[in-house]
Picture 1 (cartoon, rainbow, N blue to C red):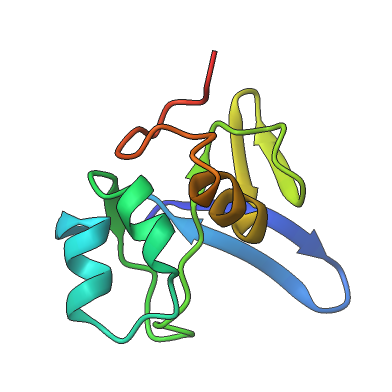
Picture 2: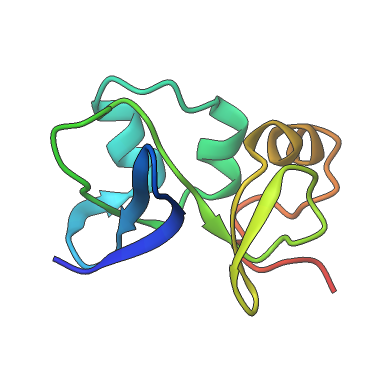
Length: 107
């Protein structure tokens, strides 16, 4: 298993995202067929995005790697790769500031 470490703290440990254990189907399919707290607007905006399985901890949680660095609450992991900012991503999708079905940041 390959884990992309997104945060490390010497006291409470590390948080990471599994990036090499893909599930069959897209984000919309997987999140619809399982218990999920993922907002419908994010399911639709990132509907074709692949989903990887991270294990038995917090299975209802989804972390979205994306390229929208300008989104409030997002955290830069590597050049052009961000995580977090889900509330702002939902808001931007609802305002139609992001193209539905695209995982590419606006230019």
